[in-house]
Image (cartoon, rainbow, N blue to C red; front, top):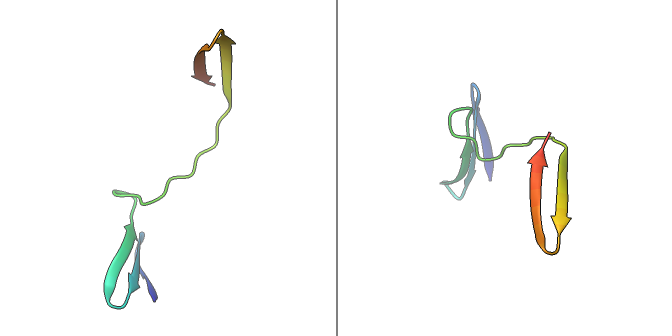
Length: 50
């Protein structure tokens, strides 16, 4: 298994094959934080992100 880095890009290879790649233009994973609130009324609800 190899983890290769090319500038801002990451590439994971296993047995010579590319398993995943990650770059700012094509992210494999995005991590965010936020605060969510919701209101429920008899099974119907609304979700808002603050």
